[in-house]
Length: 291
Image (tube, helix red, strand yellow):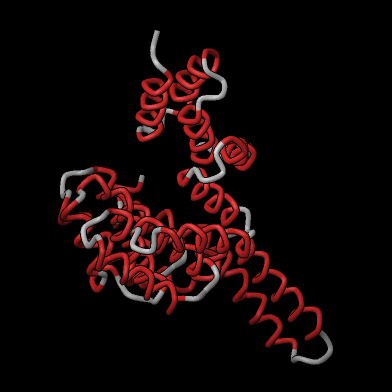
């Protein structure tokens, strides 16, 4: 029979690998034998938070009911409250923790995350800088600095924290992939190209990286610029363009000359055909990796 502490450790290990069900199985075995064990209850609260089960706050508060000063559960509760948009309560919880541990880089980073969510970039930067002074090579610290760089409009090439993080923690490369994909989705294509170029330099033979770089190059191609509203906002952009055309066509009748209305209608039909027909042709001719 495994001791509760061993099963809690096993659960945390499965969580680090994203194996939620295996972590839950380990906790179930442990809690069946020791339902009030703090290590197991805290591990369950953490699992509920990471797996977005919806019961994380209740689980964290169950730990705090038994041990009100449990630092891990107090931090977890503050993070959950932040995720729920209850920023004032989350801030109070973090400040209480920082009063007793002002040099804790993890707490400083989580407080910086909270302020970043609230748009208080200057305060967030000050907290992250203090965390970097305390733990300059910590992964959470470097991740926080990289997020702040992005929020402040820096490009991947200028994000020193990102390069340092990738050098020290090669496994954190998934962060760069997510960054490149997110920038491409937002149509911040210059920054997306830089992120993709970094990825290709590090992994020139990785098919997924090559495909991501090709996708960003495809979106950046000069001939795709007329399709920006559709690429940026998807169906919302399409409906907006269609609504604008209908409004112009309806309001223009009897006001605008017939030849001009005809030209507008012809331009709209041409644009619609272009958006449907041209992108697949471009992929076939210039970006076969995307097919």
